[in-house]
Amino acid sequence: MLLLTTTGARTGLPRTAILGYYPDTTDRVLVVGSAGGGPKHPGWYHNLLANPACTVETGLFTYPATALVLRDAERTETFARLAAADPGWAKYQANTTRTIPVVALVSATTGPPGERTGSIADLLLKIHEAFRRELTLIRKEVLTTGATTTLGAQLRINCLKLCQGLHNHHSGESQGIFPAVLAQHPEAAETINRLQAEHDTIATLLDDLQSLLATATPAAIAPELDRLTQALLDHLAHEEAQLLPLLGG
Image (cartoon, rainbow, N blue to C red; front, side, top):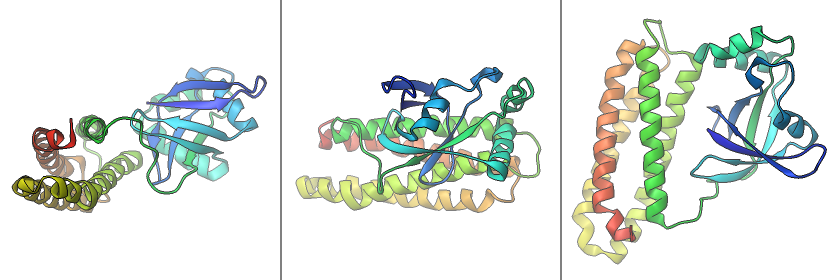
């Protein structure tokens, strides 16, 4: 879920909606103007048509974005992908004569999104909890996909986004947090070395999972996902126990 803040088309006042979203490319997420299959587009969609500038809040990050309404073939392909991931979208479309809009929320900033206020330890905990939730959801999706030949397009994107997010997070820790901790706490060298070794192990598991996503069946992917899940959960618990006290958490 995310919070989408738009500018009211008639009032000019900020309006915030709670929406489910889907990962897409590295700089954008997708939202759907289903309105429960009702006859009218939701208010936030009309607001974005009048002013595409908006703010996205995911619980971890808040960042400015620009709304891009998908049109024609891109909208058709993307809606089909989302309906394959969740058949409810197709049911909503069948219940209304309007074309349900699909909107990409494109980050208006370069580099990492703005962090919410709080200590590094607090932010690290929030990021860890986000990865735990995403792993749980993706594992459930894989196990309930059934005996299809390959994963659905949207589920593949979800997996790839998770893999990329973990890679980025661990790269940031290895290049930034770990050296900073060692500079302040040289006695923590053994702990940092172990955490880095766990990063390397998880990177190998991520590579193994990504190599399967395009062609393997859910039955083949599930064991790799289980191995990644166990390794990551163990790593997060160990990191929180050993690193957070050094960060003031």
